[in-house]
Length: 123
View 1 (cartoon, rainbow, N blue to C red):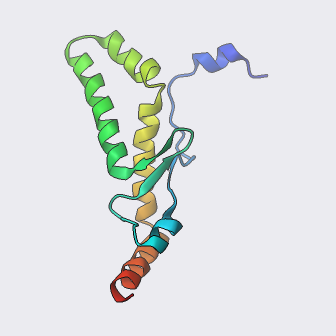
View 2: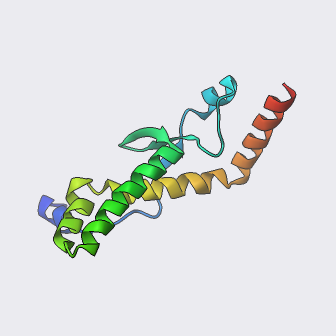
View 3: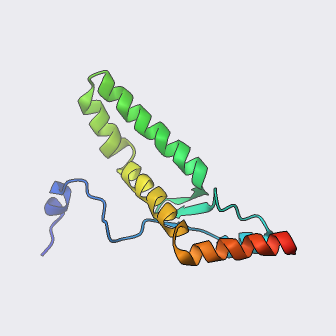
């Protein structure tokens, strides 16, 4: 039986098999001609949606803040920012960004993007 104290003892782990980020609302954006393959709307499961570049900047800012604390020698404060302040979300943001990049590199998405660009170009 799983107990709460066992869950709390676990180290930070990002599941390799689960997908934490997906391209969101792509059909509607493609129909309206507003889809941007370089900056799609991303859905971070359990967190919300944002543009890819916005999520990238936000994640980079969080990581710089943690790195600055480490440079100052405040290891405990950096640990707290990584684990407590950001609710362990920084790791999932990075995984989300990686999941979306992997998804865009699949043959299915390459085809969707090519068809979208051709439709947009030739009407």
